[in-house]
Image (cartoon, rainbow, N blue to C red; front, side):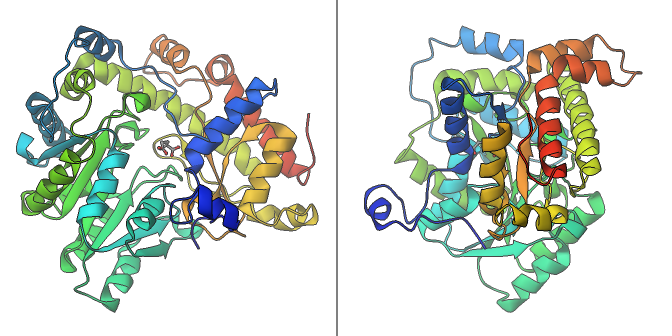
Length: 438
Ligand code: GLU
């Protein structure tokens, strides 16, 4: 279980950090760019980058704040911390104040700092995002994997968490919950969240709830687990996914009062590392977190577009015999190719890495192997990020279709043709037993 590690001693000596390779999400992006530069046709379903532009009001705010040049407070611009707290009060119904917020250059950096200052195990359900475990490995924390199953929609259950905690009830732990999920697109119901919260409270675990895809729950019905375990949940968010601003690098953590000491410790580490998050970006982020009608409209159309596309490719992939839970939010699917195992094996495809490498070579479709998400190397699973389309065009199209109608095939063919083609290629490839398709 876990990430591939490079074995070559040469690489070990020269390049790696504790046996790790470069993050898979970033590596696939660079590989795709290189293939395109060689003139190859590549469908970029590897990196999970929002296809949508940053909302115009937020871009205007950045422009208006380009002159902001001073170092800001380590914990973040006070006005932004207040806006983030108000955002969580409004969205999640949890009583945060600006004092409970920590701003960082991406939530990824904040997750790293959390593990750096907290001496405890990191509990990661699998499949899960590619960087949680490598961060723990870099810092030297113990990782406890909790494998979930396709039958259960790749989700953590209270029983799984309880089983793990019962082994050593007082051990300090950070448990990661991420939903809508990267890499599966699945989410949790209120009852399921309550069950997880009950166990988390019983064993006093720190719950790191990575809700960065919460705003792009396809029905707009995301519920934060912090409602049910407010005293022990850190809610992670940021601009990267719902605001289309991954490259701006702005993430936020909202802490319960009982965990203020953790925020304080992270702020010390931040002061000695990144100092403070970029000033113009923080000023612009105030506009994003304040929300308002234009942002709501942007989110409504983002959800509609992603929901429509997610359902369409899910239908096509099920026809091809792939198995996965229904997409409920975000922009990922995590299909199992196991129903095709025999035919793929006959072609020498015996791991998720071989699966993705061959698929890319033979069809130009770039997706990421399940092993990068903590699944066993031989399991034939992979993540598809259905983001290779022009988000601005899709939002404008959606805006022209009344809310009472569905976005139909014409929308998909006009705005998301590349993702449809990539899905067809992938499906034809798998239906023909992994033979090259044109
Ligand atoms: N979260 C995105 C992904 O899973 C990319 C950002 C990253 O990994 O740093 O593809």
